[in-house]
Length: 454
Ligand code: GLN
Image (spheres, rainbow, N blue to C red):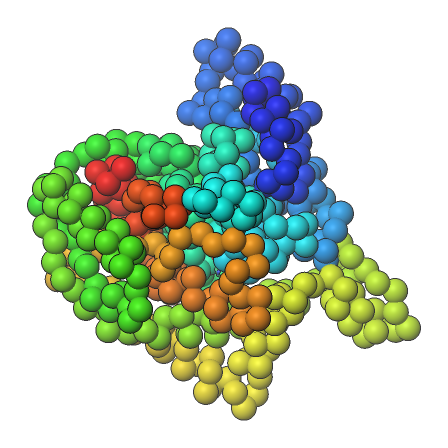
């Protein structure tokens, strides 16, 4: 714990943490020492972790990287971070993220962007983004500031930052982890999961994080397997689908090469590769950017200047409400609220929101059919490019930033588990990630396949 706290101190330039909690960490570590001495060690005893600042933490400021939650200190612990503490983990602090988890580069945080510890070849001055929204989590793990971190994934926010930083990110099946106590973005898509340095570490963390929680009615009452047992298990004869629709026009030769390399690694491990079709793939990104903002606009209605955080005085209650929200929300969050309110409004609801929900069912059905035909998992690239530098994407056109999520959003739309695993380095010296997508509640197969790639 002490070694990690001093690493955090010397890496403040990366801006990974919004809030550091050294006193709490040392207290937890001392309690861990006692449990170890008493022969009572839990599965994560004494392991120093970081917690994305979207998870409510008892007595520790929780901001969602937004000014509107300034100085909000919950009096309760999210179920998932509580599960980690129950199993002996030490918590080092709260990790930076895109505001309310909306973004793909960590540049929308009200607490400033996170810088990746990675450098682009021949370009030492460029500040490389760690991905988003879980950019604090991915950068902190990559920079060895913690052994692992919690993250959340609504449209790729675990897998894309993992791919950008050469780490492993797992988005479990919707319902595998409790959402209770995690600040809501789009409730039908949000899932908690780990970012870690190895597939094994991710498996160990997920086992502690997962499980049924009566406080989240969408969490599933099913046993949580010992995921670590899946590491190194044989993948001989497993059928891996390669979806032709992911071979986008303009896909770079480097990303296509990474994908072919992934196919080869799995073949070498004894898996069987089959070409599959997921015909509704091209609708996933536009439907995601209807459904996610719609749910966000509704979830964010609670920040009214009365119940949480920031309040700007006004002439009357409406004026106070407007001033608080105008000051408290950043530009990307405001954009989502406007899109979401529009697509939910009378007159547009059927044309946009209802239609997007129907397309979502078709996207899910594509996967159902592939799995019914005997496919055990699907292999794709995790992202359409390597990490970029701050300001290089989305500064004039937000849609450019949204395109980062083209390979990851389908998984959230279908509620499936997905893992991002490092697949080597690009010519620019930055990491590349491969994505594996599994059947519902079959994270084990993903861990076996990912360990064969790793
Ligand atoms: N980049 C996506 C978005 O901005 C995904 C975010 C997420 O998964 N939380 O909506």
